[in-house]
Image (cartoon, rainbow, N blue to C red; front, side, top):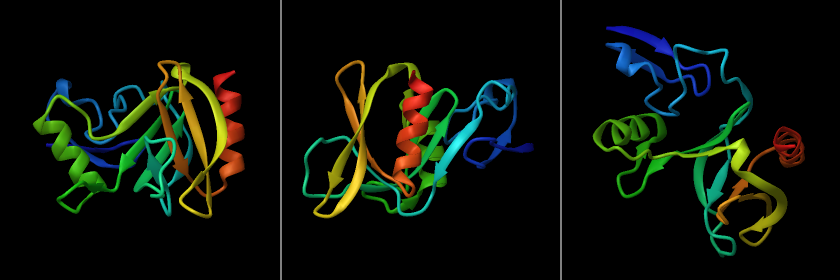
Length: 152
C-alpha cells in the first residue's frame, strides 16, 4: 500500500485504490493538490464551539483555513479520548458522516468577534444557513482578516 501525506492536515494516508484518493481526516483531494491550498493553521490552543453563548470555552481542535473552506478537526473523539488523526480517520471509515466540521468559504456570511468562556476572545463565523461556529485561535486578528478577505 502506498502512503501519501495530505497537503492540508499532513496526515499520512494509505492509498489502496483510486477510491481512497481523499484524505481520511480532512477529506482533501489528494490527487489534485493545486485545487485547494492551506492558508492558515492553528494546531495549538485552538478551541471551537457550535453554540453562540456558553460558559464553556469549547473543545480542543486543530483548525485549518484553505482557499476553499474552514476545517475544524476535533482533537478528541468525545467519550473515547482518542487523538484527532486517529479518531477522525476511524470515524470517517466507519460511518458516512465526518467527524470534522467543514464550512465552504462560499457559505460564510460574516465574521465577528466574541468571548469564549470568561476571558478568552474568539471569532464567530456566521453561515448562510443561519448556523454558527465559534473558534479561538492564536493570531485571532490575522484569522479574522484572512477569512473576511477570502469571503469577499
